[in-house]
Length: 406
Image (cartoon, rainbow, N blue to C red):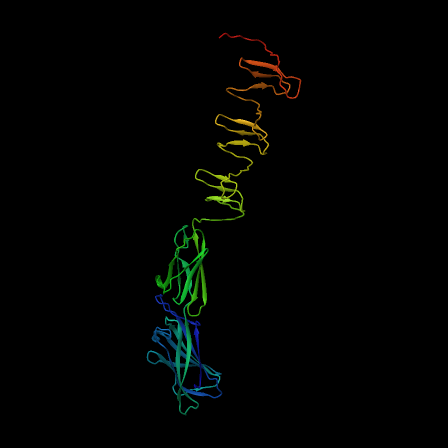
């Protein structure tokens, strides 16, 4: 059992294992805290720390020669004292008093041996450092070697710096994401509507980064989430990044107000099922009664300024109003929303010809004319009522009559 107590502290805690292929190794600082927790003084000559050197899971560093070291003793009161730290071969350091001899380590005092800028071995695991103290209870008595072990953990560095190769892409263009990470993690990239696993293995991108080209391409601005789960600790880490799209494609957009210079869409519909919809075929605009149906809808407007109208019929706002149809030979006017002939009212009619069965003045008692095979018949309105048009001859008033021979 050692006379002194030994504790390891690291910065960062835990140490991050180096990533193979990265531009630089992960580095950290290791502090060996030595304390006298007993009630008697300890007189020590040397404290030797053997460091596991190599690239494996049990190793701290691949090269102890690149590690800086320093030691300092702090008594319970009074100023601290610098200590001498020297390398012992390629895998150990030894701490001694600068003046040599066997200095006193009083109860409540402590010593700190610091290993600085330690390049951390790349494999994740537990590294054990072996401590040998040469000390005794008296300054002149026999000193003996006693041994202790202290351990530290090396974990895979948490993934960081997730970013797209291009922050803005065209709709449908491929996206490549890259990040710094370790092969100790299982990776998956998630995005709205899907996810893609990342094949296991070390990073193969430039500068030791992972670089993954996604199979799914974005139609609009998309947020990507990298989910990384440590194979050793099962701890989960997440990183997010976003990609903008220059010409986004919207499947369904619901907004209260839109102010836009240009809008491109295949259809626009109301927010509820059964609402009217507008489609945009190559030749113009179609208004439908409901989205996804082939039923024509209705357009309501105060005014319409058009260069032309092609339609089968036109009617007033009410279903009982008169209406006009457009057969191939001309125009038909109907009344009451039925197939009964209607009336055309106009101040002036400028016509090349009129084909009519009869003509009458504006008033109900006005005379009327009909057109027989032989010519024109003039009648006066009967007084019998009941809407009957009796053929009672009427009068013709003229100033003069000219007769023309054939």
